[in-house]
Image (cartoon, rainbow, N blue to C red; front, side, top):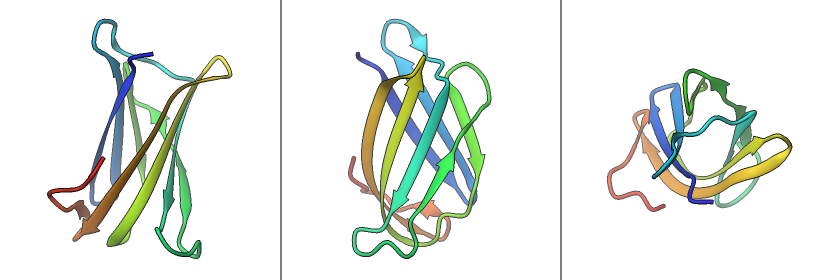
Length: 101
């Protein structure tokens, strides 16, 4: 589909932007981020993002330090328009430089 996502985490503020290189910002009916630890499920959690403008979704949720695998699902009219998986390491409330996509 060409739709891409951009994740930004700063403290407990989480922002996700959906866009298309030709169409620009993309709206969705729902955007959910699933935070999973690479080993074990004890600390896993989901965050339902709130629309905050054209193609912008935000939420407020603490993301503890350590390594996380984040699965992003964006839906529009009942169809998945984006599935994105990203691995990050958090330290001091922000992602560590050099994280992988």
